[in-house]
Image (cartoon, rainbow, N blue to C red; front, side, top):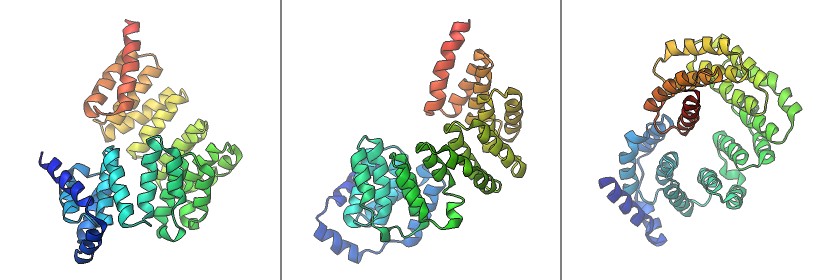
Length: 319
């Protein structure tokens, strides 16, 4: 109830006339250290921990676009899209050139079925508003999301070579895949392998792209080579096991999942992929028990719930 009242107060403040907005903004200085702390917490996924404090902060600074955008990002991550949309539009009222607000609002518009408006929103971003490489990378990712792979590639072309040959590789690879440029995607493989060797997170993202492009064998090879430098990386072990199941390399998948189990024995991701292994070997009852454990740890996961329903049906048929 208290949180709802705070939000109503914020909405009221956002509806104030623009004349009052600018007069207020000139007299109110935002705590930059507080903004930095909130940004860091959001990056670390500590949404619930900072939600009330951030809402209070937004109520105290209702005309600061940076503060409102932080709250908009939280609402977006919480899948409260209508609230996030209203907040992002308010940010753009206060700062019409905010590239980050336009990019994130375009994502919401696209997933809400407003693809044309999303494209217009991205097209309205001024070149000088892209003041950081992170923004350019986010723009390229969003172009790819809304089905504009060529524009995504054009956005990556403006990135420094160091970023283009590292963090941008999954976007470039996915764009080639979307454009049906398989040879260009294959030509990218040596660069991906070199960059991924010291970056397990990048390796995982690139492997997902390769698998979605139908290059499952190449994805498995990439993840195995990453294990050489990161042998105890839980996420790589899980993803590799999952891909090996798809390749019907069950013994290797089991070996990697067993190693992952030693690192994190109580993990929803682990139980889920172990269930996939059992299901692939027609052990539906064993898979169902593993999925029950996964659901206990991640009850809101649509992926786990969907697989649970499918496996339960198969288990009933086998009885």
